[in-house]
Amino acid sequence: MPGNLTAQVFSEWGFPVKNIFHIAGPCSAESEEQLMRTALALKDYEVHVMRAGAWKPRTRPGSFEGVGAVGLKWLKDAGKAANLAVATEVATPKHVEACLEHGIDILWIGARTTSNPFAVQDIADALQGTDIPVLVKNPINPDIELWQGAVERLTQAGVKKLGIIHRGFSTYEKTVFRNQPIWRIPIEMKRRNPRLPMLCDPSHICGNTGLLFSVAQNAMDLLFDGLMLEVHIDPPAALSDAKQQLTPKEYSRLLERLKIKKVSSESRDFLENIGALRREIDKIDHQILDLLALRMDNAREIAMHKKKNNISILQPARFDEIIKSRTREGMEKKLAEDFVSRLYQFIHEESIRLQEQVIND
Image (cartoon, rainbow, N blue to C red; front, side):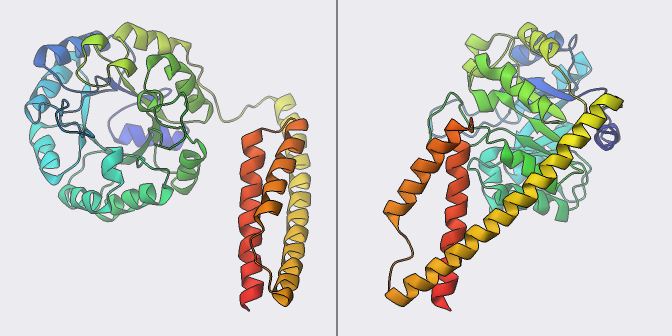
């Protein structure tokens, strides 16, 4: 459930929110009839804003790239008929201008655009002096600084109503997801920007409807402030991203299954148990830091011996042995393989940095 601050933010945007903020609608504006039918079907469910893309950035030419500005009129008319605010993606100043002319209520900046600081700056300049809410999707690649930079460019341009959307990241690793969630990045983004509402876009993370609920529930467990889900009146006939779009009824059933989590409880038993466990964690963390400091002291001493004997800093066989043995031991202790592997990669990177420092002094 959003905290008081988040509820206040959405209220200031004109959207009183009880639990979470919902944006739903088709991937693309395809026809006047398609938008109207979808909007009228959605109006009976929990939706604050209807979405649809008028312009669709596609990897290769020849794919459906959207109907353009005419779709904005269709979208606005459908929203009025269903008493819903409407949102669409912008990627250029001309898109911004067209949306303002048609009275679009919310804009979002897509992942491909967020990845380009020049494009973000052009959009920020076009938004100066406006009062429209703007949502920023994470960049395609897992680069939090690009995401943060986009937020800062819009803030410096005077955009007051600002939010962020987690839609997953493109990686070389093949998984069940279309775009890897990499939850630690949006969590860190929220830590850096606690006053910005953060939505999750499970549709683009999953790439298919079968995974949507689990990702949406995970977002709720992590206290996301809202969801953006793709909903189409006839998904198999969709001109873009057909596999990841729900029907309105499927959308309603997904929302009904969601369990909205709260930040804390007033239960005395809960507070006492959590307090005791957290104090124990604090002690353990102090011990971990002491051990890490000791490990790095040893790394510095090793560097002195390497310097004296003209030995390379990197020892590939030793690093490989550490990763394999520590991962194996960690798994025996019921720690996740990926967690242990990544932990020791970070430790090794710091060890290399300290050894370089000693050798170069």
